[in-house]
Length: 151
Image (cartoon, rainbow, N blue to C red; front, top):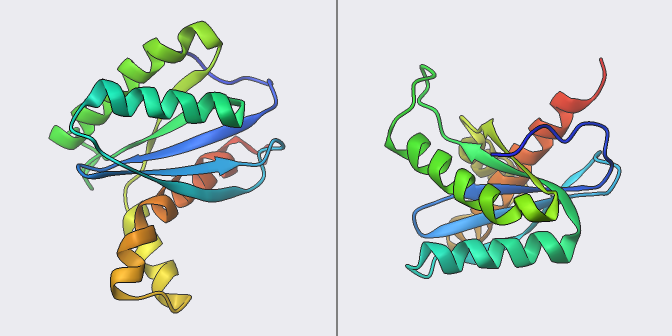
């Protein structure tokens, strides 16, 4: 993975990796707000899925991609965390020549928070399943952005 985004301004992309879908969120260029952007349905071809993510990063002119790191509740790295690390590394290799950083960020409970937010907003059932991945990506990205702000 590539290094820290430093002081370089620009958009950040949040990525919530799932077995069937990849949730995507995008920040504003000032890095103050994360918005759900959409969901990529996995094709079964990881290289193709990564290329689709790279196209989105280029389209959004992002300077950093924040990949959810699904650690266990006790902080250990299980199979899902190792898979996310591998995907982030492969994505980082594709983006390195474009000067885009790829960072892992602890995403524990982001999907739970997304479900709660959607339920509180009146989105239920099938409608919730359609947007939960991108909402989880926005929760993840917003937490990452908040952690970057000076205290």
